[in-house]
Length: 107
Image (cartoon, rainbow, N blue to C red):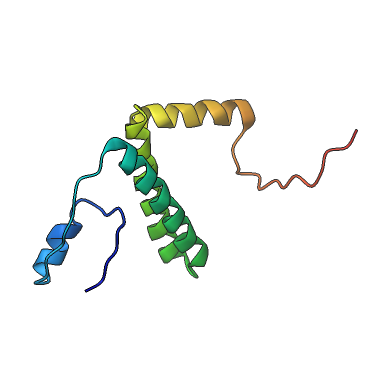
């Protein structure tokens, strides 16, 4: 029987039950949740790095966004507030649209 010990999406126990198996889960404290969500974010980033096509990339980016939204909520922010912060940073420092790569800064 596989042991996973990782954060899962809310409906995964139902998916597992529908396959005729039983998921053993427990609710995490807020502190545990933040730790596990951060771990899961790194896992999803690694999966994104490994994809080989746009469809897979978009699926992994959606997973990353779901985790970002979940972590924003834990830190007391809504997705709208998070988007406002993103917008303000983009206004002040720009976006990543120009694909600029800083090589060095000289005196």
